[in-house]
Length: 201
Image (tube, rainbow, N blue to C red; front, side):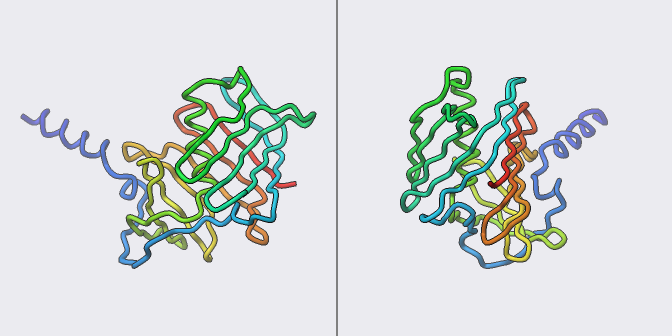
């Protein structure tokens, strides 16, 4: 009986929600949407020097995001010599692979990039919960039915955390923010060896 109670306690702790594990304090803020405006300007080409480490391989080059319409973005990654590694279109909830090189053409990897880049470019998301942690106001939302937590400080988005099973799965860090552009972005996955580092040029 004692073993059963201990097992249930451990199971409860293991299945605890991310807000509890991350010490997020619930608030009663009446906010309907959270905004991410880093890639929202139709007149800009957002160009970053990029380093992607995946499957034990490292790819360097240029990462380009272009907003071409309402809820419509094109995301491409090329080598510095101009060879295309991948090229995706995001139009509302529709996703299209325009091109991907054979070495990267794996369904799981494409789905991961689809989710990662959707989090980068989605501008307005419905809020399903609000929290406080230190100087951060934190909003919970969902992308592809997965929970994401947006960390806001001084009205600027500094961090996004994707969770699964109450655990942090992917982190998005935005640094050196100037004129509504994050000059440095790091996307790091916890469960697989995938890191994407972007530096604005």
